[in-house]
Length: 261
Image (tube, rainbow, N blue to C red; front, top):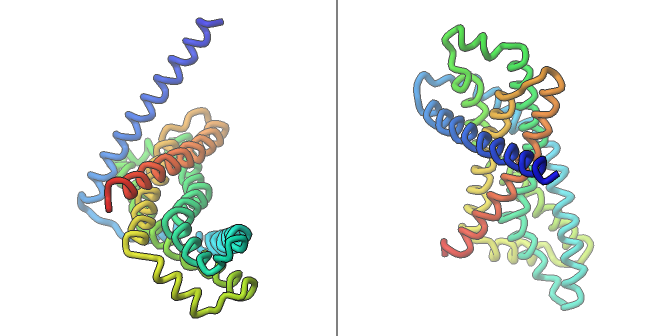
């Protein structure tokens, strides 16, 4: 029994190290090929439309309800202290620094990252990626780089949009439910936010976009086992991306809090 346990543990460690090495290799290739000509803008625009424009509706709904819920939950506690006016600053900081980038990244990972893995996985099992190589076309340059650039660009844009919608949701609750005046809410919100808060959230979103693109493409390139393998790779891609997003958020939150004044 103990032998089987250690065998399974060893396999998992080797699999993890293989994943880290493969992902690092894909990252280096992608970054290098991003800046290497020739540059083709049409695939990037197509991917930006899929990753960004088509994600606006779902991000809008989720961000609005996050603003609603966070304002109501904050009001539940703040009313006991007689400090309802500070709900605006609390919600603004929480959304801009944490909730906006993280929730947007998770939504995009579930929607766009899964689609990338399924698409590339289907190409892998039908040998379309091998066909690209026989035509002297680099699959990383042709398939990964447009997705990498589009997610790196569009996730900060989506995050900024989610921040605005989330704060709008909080504004509606505070003004129409809690009796805070519109001018007071806006003044408190803008006074609470500084450049560092906005930079922190957008920088995280930029990192999250790269994580989604690289993990989803890596899993798509390594699909095995036909249609069943595509499903397993898609699930694995979403789970790993979620874990890496949360880990990266923890890392950069600590970095900005303790190191960068």
